[in-house]
Image 1: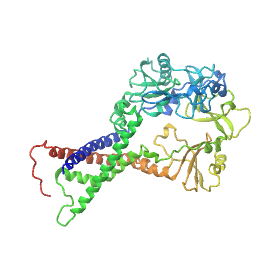
Image 2 (image 1 turned 90 degrees about the horizontal axis):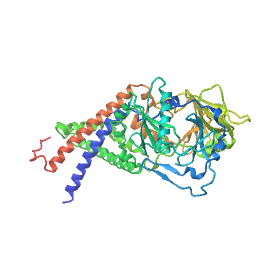
Image 3 (image 1 turned 60 degrees about the vertical axis):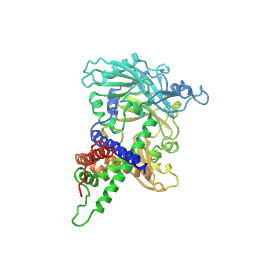
Image 4 (image 1 turned 30 degrees about the vertical axis):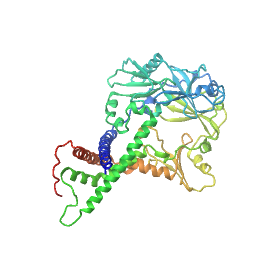
Length: 522
């Protein structure tokens, strides 16, 4: 039939293209084991922040938030452009702050105010009540100079302004949406450091080094299909990755299935179990050995996109959070900040059991709670948080209510030095239909996350299969490295042989390889 040849050739082309992607994914995956995407880590950020001088804060948090109106939170940042989404109600209405923190900007204390939703935050100076409009190029350069002096005090660096940009290759992630457009400044140091300064809050929100930029080209940029021309359009990028990964799953599954069937069909006495010679024989062998790993890797890669939102959010609901906060964030309850004798770099507003506290971040990353009211209030601790755990799901029996002093397979981090996952934590497990778990931070008195059995299954299908995030294996490095690299090399060989075989067969089918040679008998 006439339709068979175009269909057959389309299948060949598709197999060749996907085999090429598989090769790139496996190679870039090895690079990603040792190269992180450029970011300003928590230790780097804390080391670069100026000491927070609370004496200059003449406004209490409630006074600062009262300077803002609904119209101030109409801008939503995206990698391609900023959107001006006008508030549907009264443009002059007061705002309900979702988060407020105190920081320093050019020697002045300032409150950074966030609201619910995607709107960009606003900064209000705590000494005057002025609302920061937009950071211009000269101010960004001044901020970068101050950052460089604090981070590298012994070096005489002269920052050089490069550009204002909405996005570039190293600022494509959605974490930067709150700060777009960005100012890019080069330090012209030996490491080729470049800083990204927020035009919204004036903070340095990202840095990159020459080696990071170079090594990430064959790492994250390739593995995540992250070229900026594509990634600046998140929806189109997500569709592209979903489609490629879905077709890749189908290719890997059918290839593995056909390989198994062919192996069984020829399994007869006196005959080889593999019905191929030469290159195809090796492709068949590597498929039998590494085909399952290739299938699970591309399948778990598809899960990284959370298709159809199969993995529910781990963020606790407002009602659950208020079991420990006692109330929504109410800046009017907070007195003017004041402390002495400690080197604080940042302060965040929080409630515990209805009492206002400043969560102070010290230079070394430690946290300390300071009452923000003249009235006494209980500090969070393990005993009181465990005692209130039943309020998270009233009427539901608690199976376990225990303290974790070490990471395990469901509460872990690959970078404990960054301090993103505190210890100890409290784990509360409920006997409900979804087997809900909560992890609680007894230092801040907050819920870190909630998870159901769907979340935990997804963790194994994604992190377990894709990154081999098994605590037993990870704690025995370099065994983890050997296992992951070994399977990756097998995947590279399998995909490369498939690519070569596909190209050869396509050349023959298209008549590009001259007269057909007689097939060797098996």
